[in-house]
Length: 210
Image (cartoon, rainbow, N blue to C red; front, top):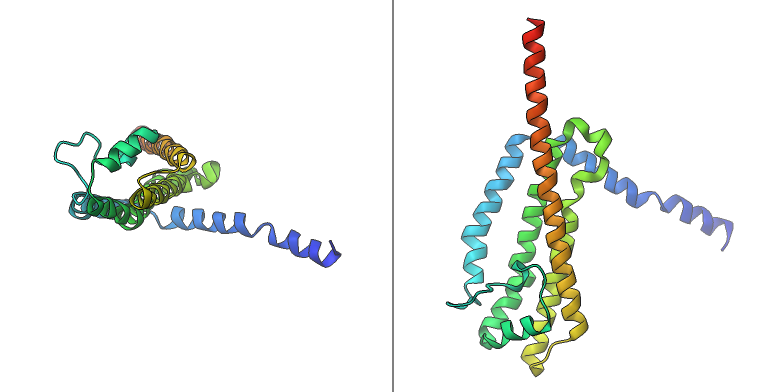
């Protein structure tokens, strides 16, 4: 490697951390209660008026599992049973749901969580750093799960079989998604508790000063 190539590599290495830092700072600076509530309304509206309608295209009237992604992991047999119980039309609706509507849903809830965490932890931004961007990890695993399941469904339509390695990956992505979801919920709960504690502390301070 030449000196010029080394210099280029050294100069290029901080780019990604810098972009992450700027994105994290952007959300801390611009997130507030009204924006958080706005994204929450968008999230609820999308879930009830779009997602549920699109999911109806592949749901069974007596089905226990409405979508594989709603369970904490699944195995090869679960996927086969899920697909075998549905017509080709329903499977195509499931593929479209994973590739389009659930992908958009991930982006919406990801932004909602990021805004809420950024708002709640804004006073501690210097201490917690990039933690406000953590919900995007859940979004990433959700997307990977969606496309793995869509790939398996496409394969099933062609030959009635599914790839065992891809099925395992889809299950792992699903479990990681729910682990991230749990951590994100914990962050929001901790943020609310800290905000309430700070409000009580400020109120006591004001009373003492009076």
